[in-house]
Every structure is written in structure tokens, then in C-alpha cells.
Image 1 (cartoon, protein in one colour):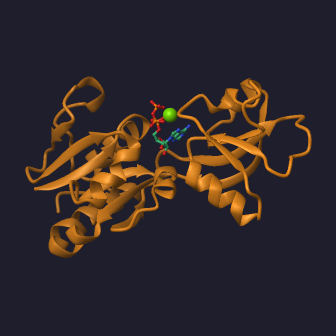
Image 2 (image 1 turned 120 degrees about the horizontal axis):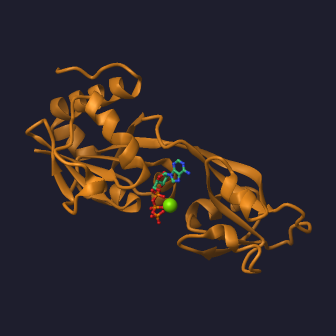
Length: 213
Ligand code: ATP
Ligand code: MG
């Protein structure tokens, strides 16, 4: 049995049709089901539906052989034991630094609100700036107006939420999309099965029909 850990929410919505093109049809719709382990049209492939941040943890520990999650999550995870063979080209957005449009010049130690604490720390220390990082779990966009932080690091797609909260993009930190990850030991021990799955998902991501190989 091969287990694929799939990030729920937006990535799941876009990955489900991609997996179907690869010949991996989910037995039920994760959005409409309470079941967290879902069988597929391939009798030796099952899907675990997880919180995005938990996908690399399951794959790293071998509780899942493969995983699908956002590059933002992988940048933050910093773990070992994972291959990242495919950019699936779905759930595209950008990780950006954003601030109030008419903000005063940055102070020497800017306060930055984000849920991407590690990535933000690396980004600022790469510039020789020691930022004060304030961890939030959501609604980052309100932090500057509320006086909690000078700026935020968050994902944007259209920028509409930023604009609605009086924020503008100051810098792009990374281009984000969903990635396929693979447990290193599984790649070695189940090489044929895993690499054939990676190949068919790769073909589906490239827009070709995965077919019945
Ligand atoms: P919640 O928003 O329910 O608290 P979450 O933030 O973990 O949960 P999502 O918002 O579905 O879940 O985000 C999961 C992943 O989807 C992110 O890690 C990112 O890779 C991707 N994603 C998030 N926002 C966007 C976006 N605006 N456009 C494209 N992809 C996105
Ligand atoms: Mg979210």
C-alpha cells in the first residue's frame, strides 16, 4: 500500500482533478466527507487528508510515502528525509512582505507579524536585519492597522485582501505552488512503485493524461 498525504482546503480542491488525470480517482470527495483516509481507484494507493503543515511531518516520518503541500509549508518545515521531485503548478500564489501604503521608514528592528516565522527570520537575516517576529495564526492583514506590527509576511494571490486592509506588497519573498514530496526511504525501498506514481502525477501536472500505466 502507498499512502499519499494531501493538504486539505485549496490544494486538495486543485489536486483532486490533477490526481484524477493521473488515474488516481478519490473514492469520495474529501470536502464532503468526515473520513480522513480515503481509498482511490488504485487499490494500492490511499489518501490521507491533512492540515497543510502536517503533510511534511507525515512524509518525513514515513507515515505517508508521498505528500502534496504548498512550497510555503516546505520552506517553513526545514526538515530532512524528503525529496521534492515535482512542482505541480497548482495553488499558485506569492509569499510577500507587505506594509501600510504610506508607512513611515522602517525602524532598525521592524516588528513583523506572520505565521511563517522561520522563513521570515531567514529573509530578514539574509538582509542583515534582526526583525522582531510576532507569530500569528491567521488574519495577518489586520496587524499593522491594529498597531501590532510594522509589516506582515503572508501569502497573496490577487492582493485584494491586502488592498482591503490598506496594505501594499513591499517585496516578494518566494513564488509558491503545490509540490509533490516523497519520503527518501520509500523512494529507495519501493522505488518502482513510487517512481511510477511520481511519473504519472508529473505527466498529469504537465497537462498530459496520466493514462493507465
Ligand atoms: P485555514 O486558512 O483554514 O486556516 P490553511 O491556511 O492551513 O487553513 P489554506 O488557506 O487552504 O489552509 O492554505 C493551504 C495552502 O494552500 C497554503 O499552504 C498554500 O500553499 C496554499 N494557498 C493558500 N492561500 C493561497 C492563495 N491565495 N492562492 C493559492 N494558494 C494558496
Ligand atoms: Mg489559509
